[in-house]
Structures are given as structure tokens and as C-alpha cells.
Amino acid sequence: MQQQETNSIEERNNNNKTIIFALIGVALIIGALIAILTLTNTKEKSFSDIDDTEEEEVVQQQKFSLHGTVDIYPVYMKLSIEGNVVNGSYYYESQGPGKQLNLRGIYDDGRLELFETDENGQQTGHFVGQLKKGIYIGIFYNARGNSMQFRLDK
Image (cartoon, rainbow, N blue to C red; front, side, top):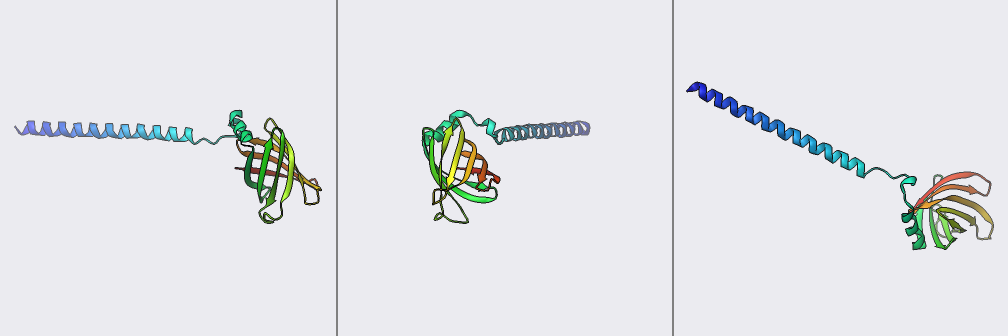
């Protein structure tokens, strides 16, 4: 009788171990699936990942504000696009909105070129870059011909 009790206890212990290992295996599989789904959904988009239909939404909006940096200098920009003609203004955060520079330019198939003029109408800079999905990235050339990278977002 004692032999049967010992076998019964061993069988229960084996069953419990099997259940525990199965639960651990299921938990590991679920964790791996969650990690894979999270990594694929949070992958950063590069400029080449942005499709043209998203770009058209920006153009149809016609008026928008951007904020970012020219080199290390924070700037705020307002643009209005009508067809291929672009008008707007921007200012350096350090100068404040009272010291705005005027912008006029051309928008063509994602390429946005802007000419900066001061309050006297003198050209003082030139932006050349790509506008896609509300992000404007490129090179700014100041009046001395120095170039600086810029990135502006909605």
C-alpha cells in the first residue's frame, strides 16, 4: 500500500513539473511574439519610406507652421503654398518674432527652394531642400555663402 502511495505522489509531481514547463514555454513564446511585433511597428521611417500621397496632404493644406533648427539655431517658419509658389516668413528663436525674415520660393515635386530677404528687401539667405510629410530638410546658405544643415517639422 505504501508503494502505491509513493508512485501516486511521484506521478503528481511529474504532472506538476510538466504543467509548469508547458506554462513557461507558452509565456516565452508569447513574450517573443510581443517583442517581434513591437520592433516591427516602432521601426523609424527614413525619408525614402515616406510616400508621395502623404506629401500631397501637406500641399493641399497650403498653410502650415514648422519648427526646427538651422545648424544649431532654433527657428520658427510659416509657409503658404499655392500651386508652385511659396510665400512665408521665419525667425530665429533668439531674435524673437519681431525680427522676421521674408521667404519666397518655388515648390516642385517635393523640392522646396526658398529665398530669404530682410526688411530692406536684400537677399540674405537661401534654403534648398525636400518637403515631405511636413518635414523640411536640406541646406541653408547664408549671405556669406556658408552652408548649414536644417531640419524643420510640423
